[in-house]
Each structure stands twice: as structure tokens, then as C-alpha cells.
Length: 477
Image (cartoon, rainbow, N blue to C red; front, top):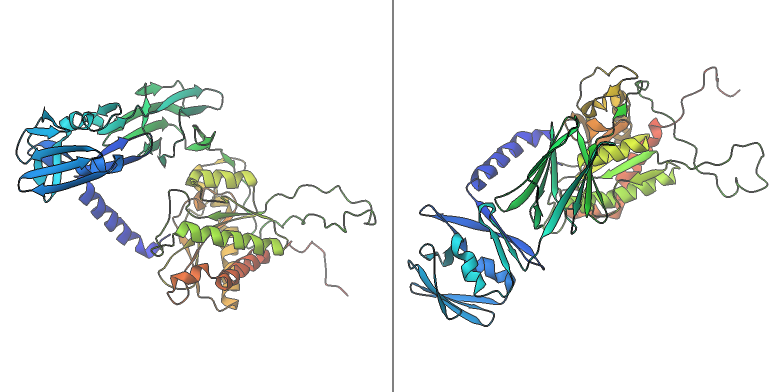
């Protein structure tokens, strides 16, 4: 996670990157064993593909240039191409190319329209090229997508013939899935549903990817199942507004589970039966799966740091008798909506999302940046304002944790920030970003440093979770 003051720089960098990559066109190749992509090259209004880069993942490939000739050895075959010529000898057979062969700074470029003709002489497997989509399937490999709309819910179930792991993004009125490494195809292009929430689904192939766009009248949540062979799209659960908690207080922590002594026959009688203690603090290790977060060093990704810190924080809380749970126990991908929905379903005392950075020192604690007016009690909260009723308790939590950091001489700062999923969480919620000691990134994985920070966070949570004094209760005499 980057701090707010870097937002402008990040936006500028992204714009520059998009501008640089706007002219690049990707061509994707799928095989039973791997999938990869290469960059298409435009020459004289025609599209070319780098032949060596296409063949290298498919077998033993070697090539060298001899003047205007480019000689290729692929597995046990030999081929020869000549710059500027529309003919080539591939595996000892002459073939015609749709445009002249090009040698550009040592790279061998063949016309995209002739790629299948060339590969057919070199690769024994079946070939299917979808030229307008810039996709090539080798060996009959496909992942078929079938959709099933269920009005009860409503929900849209996506069934795949093989596991998938698309990137998922949401925006008002739309959920978008992009398949970059999976050979996903679908029979249907656009399907319309007679539903106000899930209105339509459109599948398309272009620029070396497959894309599924779902138009909606409400925020949607994607849930994976059957080992990533199904994805269920459904409306994000609505959160019923609650009365704002009193300033600087939060609901008390439920009593810990009875100890073996308390449950023994000699324990005092008349107690209510022990019940299952729900998790009272939900810990969100930031990032995960394909989202590596910040590259803190050449070998250390933010997602790994946040998971290690989350496990240590859970242990620190449990030592204080405060139950806690992690949103992910391993290297799992979770969208912002999934993190918020899972948290709200747990109805926790507090939500802590953890991040790591390399700019600055110590700890930064963030609360949601939302309007100050809470929705009417008893109404349903807008998904993007679920945090509104909890801003006071979130700020109290941030202040309590910051005070514990100060006691330990750990530099700390607090600030409101536009950061998901804080605004979607219906509970006291803060984001905590930890920086390394003295600029040493390795210190982020130091057990002593982790323990000190996590103890401060746990003490800060415990400080605002103590039951308020009962009315009329006086000091002991």
C-alpha cells in the first residue's frame, strides 16, 4: 500500500505506462502444458510475430543469422528464411508467406497470417488460430465456459471445464473478468437476463485475452468454488445500518471460552451452557494470490509480509483472550468486495487490514475517509458507505493503537484515506501499514520487530474493547 502523498505520482506513472504500452498488441499461445504471449510487431501496415519467441516454449530451438538468411533448428527439423522474401523452406519444404519475411535487429518476424502455415510443418499437434482475437490454440486445448442464470437470489453461475484464475475488477454497474493465461472460449457472445440486478453477460476475445463483462444494477460479488471450476456471481450482501456506537467506545469483547477448570464438575453451578465464541477481530493480510502487493525487495513481496504479520497478530490477540480470525491463511486471491462481505458476515468487534511499505519509518494507521452523516437508523446502508456509522469507533481504535505505539517509542501517524475495503466494512476498521527499521527491508520479517508491533496493536484493541462501567457502579470501598 502506498501512502496518500504518493497518489499523484502513482497516477502519473500509470498514465505513462499506459501510454507506452498502448501501441503494444499481445498474441497468446495456449498448449496442454503451458500458455504464454508474445508482442506483435507492425511493419508496413501488416502484423508480424517473432518466430523464435513463439517456438522456444514448444521445444528445443536454436537459430542464427547468416547475412540476409535466418536459419532455424527446431527439435529435429531445419528451416531457412530470407529477409525480404515471400518464400521460405520449412522442414525441407517450400512454403509461401503472405508478406515478406523480416529480420529486425536479429529478430525473425513472420507475417501473422502465415504463422499457422509455418507451425504446421514444425509442430505435430492440431492448430487453431483465432486471428482477429490474436489467440492460438495448440493440441486441442480449450477451457469451455457455460453460464447458468438462476433467478432465485439472483445469481449467475459460471462453469468451466478446467480451473481458472481470472483477474476481477468492479466498477459501478459492471463486473469484469479477464482471462490472460487460460484458453477460455464460450459459445454465447451476449446474454440478456430478465433481472434488474444481473442484467446481461457479454463474452469477447480480443488482444490475446478472453473477457467476460457482467452488467448489473447493484454491486456484485464473485465467489470461487469446485477448485476454481465454478464462479458464482451474486449481489453483494446488503448491510443493515446500526445505530452509531458511542464515541471512543466499542462493544465489549465476549467472554473467552471456559477453561477446563471452569467446565469441571466442581465449577460453580447455575451458569449458562458454554456457547461457541465467534471471532471478534477479523484480520486481513493485504494482497495475496496474483496480487503480490509492493515489491519490497527482489525476493520479498508485500503479500508474504502481511500474512506473516497477520499470524503473529492473531497470536498476540489470543494471548489476551480476544478471539481472532484471518481472511486468508495462505496465498489466496480475494477481491475487496469478498474481504468486506466475509468480514460483515462475521459481525466482528474490529477489522484490521495489514500492509507493508518501504517509505518512511514506523507505523501509519488509516481510517476510512467518508462523509460525516450516518444513514438513517434501520435503513440499508449503501455498500460504499457501510463504514459511515462506525467512523467514531474506528477513530477511537486508531487512537488507542497509536497510543500503544507511542508507549513503545515506535514512530506512528494517523490519517483518513480513501482505501478499500475500509469503506465497505460495518465495524470498527483500520488499515495499518508497517515500515522497516532504519530502511532495512529484512527487518519486516524480524520476529522481535513483529512481536513489538503486534503487541502494541493487540493492546490498542484491548484498550477500546473493555466493557464500559455499569451505571451506578462506584469505586470499591
